[in-house]
Image (cartoon, rainbow, N blue to C red; front, side, top):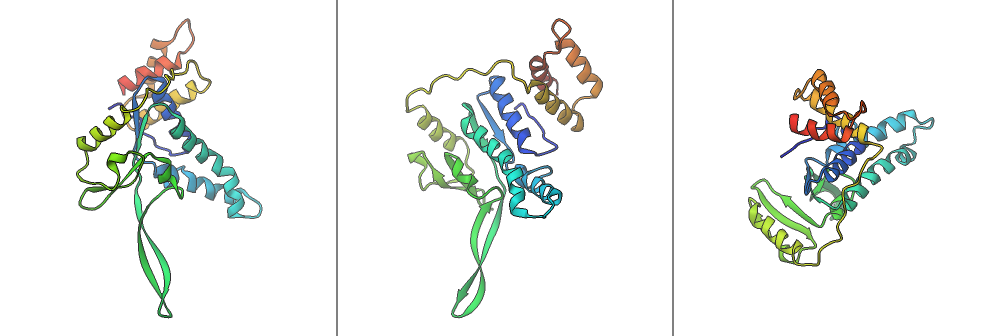
Length: 231
């Protein structure tokens, strides 16, 4: 697998990586994990805290107006990309206070993804993994998966999905877009993450830019492709 290692989990970085994968001709992208876009460093919750601190009133509800568009852009990109997309999300146990026989009790309701409420409904298929590595299908558009559970889900699930996806009419071809204004920003994202991960030096990045330049101008698309191969 080619990888992009994010050190800062702003939703825009996820958008850039998904768009880069499409433009470079990849058939699919795996996000591991989508929870970090919500609760990781630079993610939505940190953005919300920062927006609240900056506001004059400290109104936490009003702060969402500054944060929600970035998260919405990520969801839109995930839904609109023509390539296959798989995402993992961490879960947490959800509790609620209930009244039983006139006494308040804390009741365990189950687990829920650590992401925006309802994020799991954005996917065509959702498997919930338990501690025994059993994957239970809790939501699906694929009839053959409805109500199923799989021990160590792997090739057998992939085959069901592949057969289902190939059973309908071909989708209209969507060609990867050409030159894009954010190509330099996307290259910088890849380069910074590779440098911070220790997979390449700044000097090597500069040399890579020089090697891929055309007519004295940086070709950031070609540089991104070379960087993915080099780091």
